[in-house]
Image (cartoon, rainbow, N blue to C red; front, top):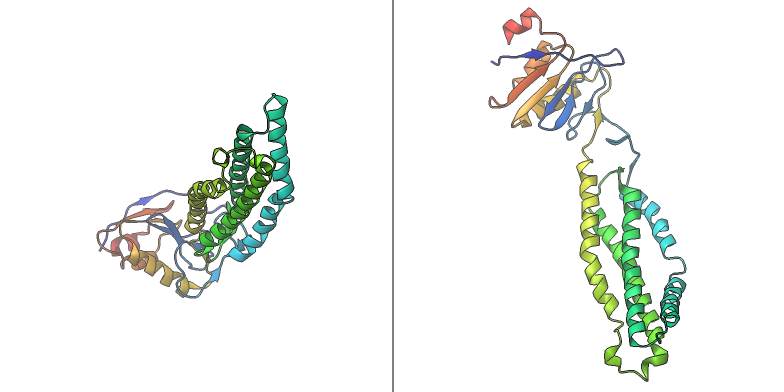
Length: 283
């Protein structure tokens, strides 16, 4: 038999009352005739809340990917033309300061094209955050790999286009200059390998945050006492450190449910009304 301490807290703003329990860092609820959220795995008959923890629309990974892909496509519009214009700009700047379009200029072109790849990686990451930050997505176990495949394949395509542009830039002077002194088109594959770890790590972080918000919210319909009590019993049984219960009315049923918890678990009751004398004597 346990001893109980009561502390004060207010009723719900809608005039009803809500029984809730916190097991570790989760917040749970009783279903004794009232709707209440259960932040744990699904247990017993229930109705799933259609919105996520941030009230964002629940969606499948495929739906979010369908939103993402056109945004990434927009970044690739006229990609070859953009890279060629960048090459022309660099060569024009070299000529403007009195330097020929020789070895140094081609190294500058190579660096500018690599910088463009870095910028593209950052732009894609920005779009990933735009689409996925704050989202509530079901079944996102394979999302990280899908995002890596999608983004890295686009970077690889850009690297191939940049390599082709560098070869075209070198072409007119290649026969008159030692090729060993010119930048190699293979530099873009090497640069891609440098970009991959950071981009992959950022994607893993985005997906980790998504998974951290995937804990299902369950709402029990009014009158579904059995489903709610069954869920609470399972939560109380699984508690290892502490349980906090916030309830305007602490009744015998709550105490009965708590009896299944381990004796080592610290239990704290918070209420604006202490238990009645009968409950105090019984528990």
